[in-house]
Amino acid sequence: MDEPVLILRDPRESIRKCSLTPLRGVSGFRFLEYHASRRVEAAGRILLHPDGELIGPEDAGAPLLLVDCSWRRLPSLLRTIDGEPRRRPLPPLVTAYPRKSRDDVDPSAGLASIEALYAALALLGQRREELLDGYRWREPFLEANAALL
Image (tube, rainbow, N blue to C red; front, top):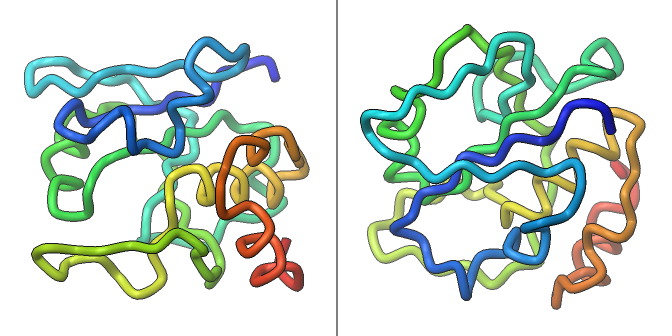
């Protein structure tokens, strides 16, 4: 992978519970901690986001930007992004992660971050089976989404 997948991570989220933690230090993935004063250049990147045109073959080759935070905090993290990345949602997928929301702002189609990352790369022709190696809900996720992935 020429350009790393850039992961903008909210430090308020537990690293222990984060599904992306096993990717720290893995080639092709770069983590940035969110700070309100830090600007993140994202020109030319695909931003996984619920708005926009579905991610598809025309996006192949573009580097990804994944924002790893709660849905409630997403607007704050997005305000630090510069460069007009292309917002792309994933097709409707089913999460296997047992989610709980204290404030009920999670969309019904929300995914664990590792699920979203795996799906986006697969849909861009960069299937990376090893990304789900340490994911406890790997098999249920893959089974539930076999038709789309």
